[in-house]
Image (cartoon, rainbow, N blue to C red; front, side, top):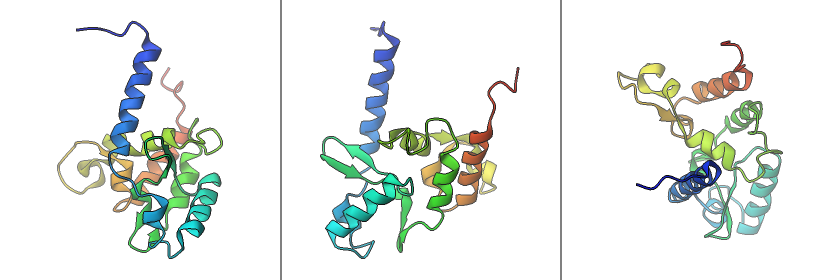
Length: 162
């Protein structure tokens, strides 16, 4: 067994591995979203990128696709999830997760696709399973719980336990 002696290098490798795992989820491209958004591809691209710039849509850069892709949890059968802006407003209160700091979107993607025990079936009253769930997974069925978790994390003082 070989240990990385450089913790920054180890962290970078882990981050890149997680990024690649998320990209393997086959998030939709602009071309795939255009019909859902009832726009031509060029209009959809301009609209999505402007919404991303304003922090109202999450786009992440995919080097292998040489394009932005859009995590699928943001969309439902009618287009953009109606509570998405509330979620991103709450997330922007968490240090490092506001759109001006997280311009590439990856910090928000990692938060949204990371598991939280607060979003387990048991915590939400959906059943006995206590395994954590990702905010991206729960957003469609329990948007209030996801938004509340983001708000709580935005106001959490790590020094309060001392």
